[in-house]
Length: 185
Image 1: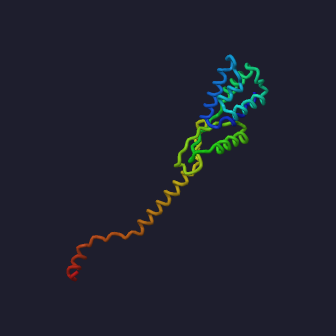
Image 2: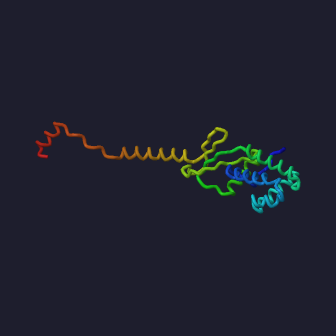
Image 3: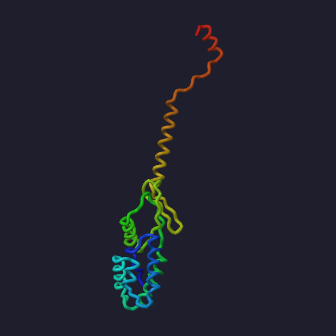
């Protein structure tokens, strides 16, 4: 089966865990007496996302009336979500939902795969991001550039200040003291 685009339901690792819990809750109730898929989805996902979920079933040729088919599809979704790659990203700001959606869309378009994000915020990055994926770390933040410029500037200021400071007077030699005394200074 072709991977299913679930980016409408989740972009972060935390959202994926929440999605899995909700799908599991629906899946556990499926064979209970008086089970209604529409009601169960609305209880777990709300009106908008439950409608999207029903569209997802329809787009994947799953008959919403066939509970065994729905249960199998839910299981497939759970397996897919647990295998989605996770990109740990540290940024200097709290991302909006639109920012996360844009990141997710970029991966879908350019990498042809859905990616989950494990977001952390570190304002000391100044701008940009540091990324950790599959054991590889890359720092694309502005902080190293900022620190280099700051250190260079501080070094230049310190050197300039040292050159401009007057030198302390040398201790007078014995000959200079004798001459000062004899001249009445």
